[in-house]
Image 1 (cartoon, rainbow over the protein chains, first blue to last red):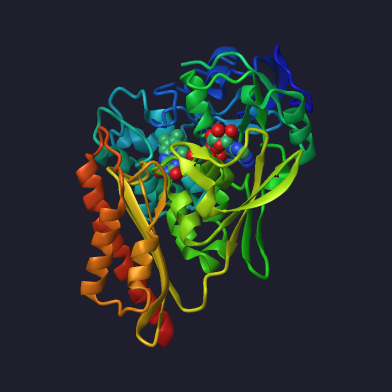
Image 2 (spheres, each protein chain N blue to C red; image 1 turned 45 degrees about the vertical axis):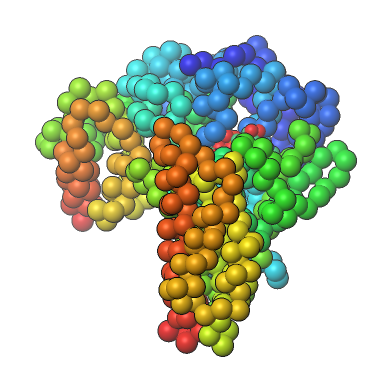
Length: 167
Length: 295
Ligand SMILES: Cc1cc2nc3c(=O)[nH]c(=O)nc-3n(C[C@H](O)[C@H](O)[C@H](O)COP(=O)(O)OP(=O)(O)OC[C@H]3O[C@@H](n4cnc5c(N)ncnc54)[C@H](O)[C@@H]3O)c2cc1C
């Protein structure tokens, strides 16, 4: 728990990740991406540039997409984190994941989780986003192998699936 | 790409922050707001503070309020909150438009208004917008509170007039005068990237002539620049194409030492500054004319 007086050593942290409660003691300098990958062994959150540019390490914190390389683990104390592992439910892929498969929205797949988490926030905020809104989100992410057209199609397909399942 | 070790503290009040600042050598301390500039610097070990004071728990610094004079924004208010604010969209569409040009949604979710002011990146949108809107920045320290006009706040690259023991608490933005026109434009390689050059302006039209024009650019020099000589030249003149061209070229010529880097040469930046000042003045004049005829 973050305290009112300076602490080095370990800081106690309580957080829910994909619905599961975790308690850990972390070094203040540990970032959220490393915490998820190395402490919780949730390795679907990939780490790219480590300075916020590529967007590959996006996760949701209390529903908001963030770069997990630009947040300290101690800063998610008391919060709810969602990672790529938390997209599928009961063995069934999330519509965003299905859409990326159907539209070939990935080649090597290294960056894909970051796109999916950024889109997940968009769809939560706005169930039927315009093409411009989708492009704004996709434009904040870097993919070095597909070109972005297949990713845009995946995003549009996902939006269509999600609005169909709502109606 | 891992930060050097530091101690960490997240006080929940401003007085708590000031107390800890007082107990430590301020040069060894870094305040952390959204971390969207500081975390990269820590990760790259360009910054190695002994102590990080996280402002994220100081709820009193996270607000957007309307006052008699205008709008007041707490330093820890996220850019996302500005983007989502009906009040900002209505009262300060220029601030709104510049906000959505900053980075990408995940950056705006964390990055704060105060952090961008304190970071004073020469290519950052907010300092230029603060100049044009005549904002004031409020800072506190154990020595008391002071209010700093935006014109005095930004000093040079990544440097403001804040002392190491001062905490920025709020940004006060006066209401735009009725029937003002405004505009904001930037050129970046990709939407959301730091701008190569951007420009912003406000002005009014009274009896066919320009009143109180304010013009600023960013990405051109070591800090956001306001062009007072060009503003004087335009004051009292009709907003004709010829006049705007003259003002824009005067503004471009007034840049003393344009930045030069891998993205653009000094000449190109000066050229863009002129082009964009011309465009924002034309756009602001159109908006001012529409506001005057009630269209
Ligand atoms: C990929 C990416 C793209 C970006 N694109 C843009 C862009 O296009 N335009 C743009 O303007 N910015 C951009 N940024 C920077 C972003 O807007 C940062 O959020 C902002 O510059 C700093 O705000 P912060 O809240 O994150 O502050 P932090 O990173 O936490 O702090 C920045 C500095 O300000 C100081 N500070 C913060 N708050 C206070 C305070 N209240 N009092 C005193 N000192 C304080 C800190 O000590 C630190 O030195 C981008 C960042 C990334 C990672």
